[in-house]
Image (cartoon, rainbow, N blue to C red):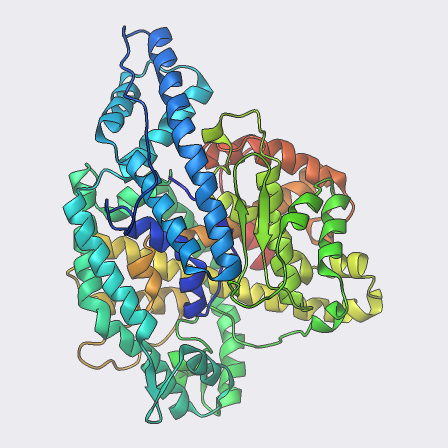
Length: 593
């Protein structure tokens, strides 16, 4: 069961991440029936319609009636829920957040109906549904219902533990120089201080939260495994991937391939990074430690060869710029941006997201723009989500009127969000003289390459750690963590005190498990589309692609990616659109070679 809002792809300040993923917290908490206080929305869903005869015609007819009754119940609730969250995000109003939570609970109650799940399970196992669109709806419903069949008592334990962990993260303050400090202050020290001792103190202060929550996260992993096994899965990792239509073997292969193709290029890149950092801190490269890499996890590229592009965006009307750009490729976002709320105001959520309110065309963006390159990239990114939602074929059944997968809409958003670092796009759209951009082109490419490679290798740590965590929660997890960081990030493990749990200082592992890999899948798909559009649609070299004024781009995306909605599984969508399933070689070609 999905809730229709998509946030900017990644925010590396953990306090911001926790706000940006607020819906995921609701999705976990509200699985427990009765956990929201106050009167709940009245939910009525028709009784299961049992087939009169085991024939394709009879089964399909009954399933259509079931789906019609289900959609009549869930669609209005989902619209109300999305509107409540929109209001809450604009105002910070607690009543609006509570209304959103109550409606989320009401929807979850629909999907927890065990008789309806048994009906769907029987129909699915019978194999008599032959109509492709009906079969696809059956599969989506089955997975959404299955997600909500966990024993309420077990789920209550999971929710309690998760809430306790998140409360620790929310209230934790590291101690630096004898004073409690915010995470923002720790990030500031890691980005600006040249004192290695001060950097280590800040880094250690951040990591100490891991020891406070590690035992609870291990217990949570075991409870998640217990829930997964009760539903016939090997463990939680396997269950979670399969419920979002991803195969564990396929995901492992994709990331193993990406690792193999980036091992040597990343090693060479790290030689340049380490030389620059060693010079900055007055050390030999082999003496560099994890606290020298500018954030606690080395998930962002250090500020080496950074290019200041903000000067080109001063005075730019970002709304007009983005509208003009998308219209130029045949994807009109004007109605989306008119419905949107794009600038800061008191009480408003300080980040950005896109939401499809009703699957009927009411698509909106919330942003907090300022005239910088990053914020223009954010608006291009969110508008990418928006046009994807807008151009899904509205003739599709309601259950199929959403994106093929979370990472496919991220891919479109990332594809367009990258444009503010495309020299040709800057020249064409901002009318910046070529002689001011071209001298920066190599530095722009290096910075983009650094950011992407660092992100890719960091994601490999998380992906492999989570798989091994759920395979064996009782192993030495801190050793596993540092073995993976050495393997994929080429970092030297420092001496760790007894009881250190550096792995547990990453909140995603506790609060939003087995999701992080989707960010990287989105980046890979964006690169795959980039090369297909250049070589097969526009017949130009990929590095000459500026994306400006080519209606063929919009036509391809509309027909091959957007219009099918969720009627195709993500790998089928890619095969139909580009001739092959997700392939990391295009990301490697664009950012590694």
